[in-house]
Length: 396
Ligand code: NAI
Ligand code: NA
Image 1 (cartoon, protein in one colour):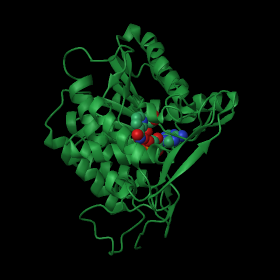
Image 2 (cartoon, helix red, strand yellow):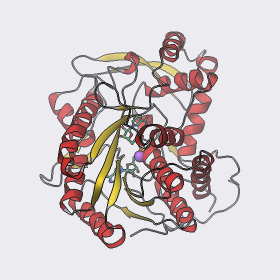
Image 3 (cartoon, protein in one colour):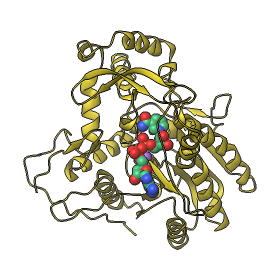
Image 4 (cartoon, helix red, strand yellow):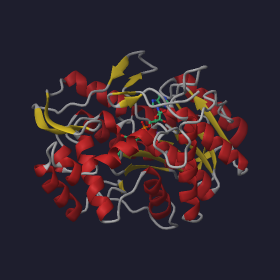
């Protein structure tokens, strides 16, 4: 079939297998161009099919020749109906990895469930014995707690008072004011239940109990801080409470891993266009201004550049892992540079529907958004019919 983008707000209902494949190939080539990393050898990536998780998997496999096991929640294709992007990304990744002689298998299902945890543990026992790195990169709007059966929905709201600021509809470039009412106590608890550290901890406890964590094993989850501009809706809002919880969970997991000499880290990453971040109000305008400034200064990075730097310059240096005073790894260092943030803040004050095309990188935002789904990728013949029924080689 010929596949075209079908956009509804901040999601795209279709994905292109060849475009997703090309994205994966481009990321693999980037990692290969940066040379080998003395990194992990057997890696479990939870949330492995898109964004930072996919980039972590590619970096592990093609940077340090690691066997990788991926977990994700993606929609398979049906005749005449394309799969979700993460499905095609994973199909392309596993084909490339297996061709390169690397173990690459995956499990498609709800990572929050006990059933999927058991399935993954069984696979590790059968195929790998133990893993030496666990990446936790799940981003989801809801979670069913397997022990209570309660489904929690996360919200993106400020806490304490309503928040009014600019936002952009990145499809038509219209800049407008948005007001968001403050969260209730229940909203906060639900968001922490979905995006906080509880499931990460449950994973590590289950893996440890099954003796599938290698001595010295590391585990890493991803967080975000961002500038004062976005604080009310991000770091000091409901999602920020979840990130506080995630960061606190890192030290509690480190305690759990003590006898293995293992360690848990949170890495604070840069703001990037992913399926998760396009859903957050205000953030797309911030990202389009940030991209403009960082590209002009030659310091812009995407998920793969961020993960390459995380592995090579933070996690696997043969020295101690550099962290901030709260024990967090910072690869948002370039985003948070004072000169970068000063420029973004002054552009923010000026941004209107009329001025944004000059002030910001709205085009870059849009391209990245379409790229997430395999569209507008260079070198792909979109006018040609493709087979939507792509299989994932290592799907267990
Ligand atoms: P993403 O939407 O690209 O990736 C989410 C992944 O989670 C996908 O692989 C998806 O299949 C998987 N997933 C979702 N629900 C699942 C479930 N129930 N079971 C199994 N897998 C499931 O998101 P992104 O942006 O890569 O986010 C990953 C982490 O990075 C999140 O913790 C996010 O807060 C954090 N982060 C994101 C930043 C950004 O600007 N995008 C910046 C800094 C941190
Ligand atoms: Na991810």
